[in-house]
Length: 171
Length: 171
Image (cartoon, rainbow over all chains, first blue to last red; front, side):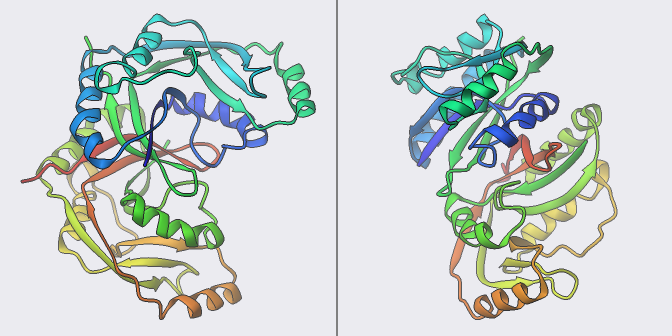
């Protein structure tokens, strides 16, 4: 069974992201707008309960809520025709994602952590260029306080369901 | 902002429900398969944090995991062209839903609690009759242990995002 760890930002930010995702994101109906902390990994009930959840509890207990800003759109081109709301560099968020890959959660990372909220994917090159052209100069002014993350699992239809919520409880 | 309280059953049961929802349920992409404990209600951040979540924590603390069975399909016809996986009568689940409407969570119930997982809705009368005919004699043999419920909120696109998970921790 496939699991992943992500943050759903506030309703305000999710609504903003969805206004683009609705038209441009092939995953629009599969999962709400999110910041991925740990990409999909294989596990099972037993490992989740015995080692993953206690490790996530520990992380949540010592991590403080994280304030983020979004000012513009970013792109993974040429690696992929993906556009995203770029989260401004944030040491706390970076650290949180690092911890999702250490100890009981150890695992190779395929990519450097680029904190983002995807708003467009699976586009043709032409579509991508059009949309990027129209969005790259847009200025955003979104701020948000992230105070929880979620452990999700994937259903057979590729959509994601929440297994557990972890509140950031650090002082 | 609109909130609701629901249980997502196990992946096995969600996958089974989705095999029908994909074709027959207009809400397929808006929320994973679920058992509604409390229908959508208006609230705000402050009330949620101050009164709703503490009340739900209390309920979760004293409620034991609940074993359910699904043996057949039910229908809300003539009230609505809705088909659902019928959850066999279950006192514990009934009690849990009652508690979602008492004390800080008080609110009038529009309907008697009929525990179910919707698999078809917004059908025309003809579609409904066809599908009901083909499913009413089907025998299901699903069992599941429900060990958590979730507080959700609705986004502008009418989809639902999870705010918090509550584990049933009763002994």
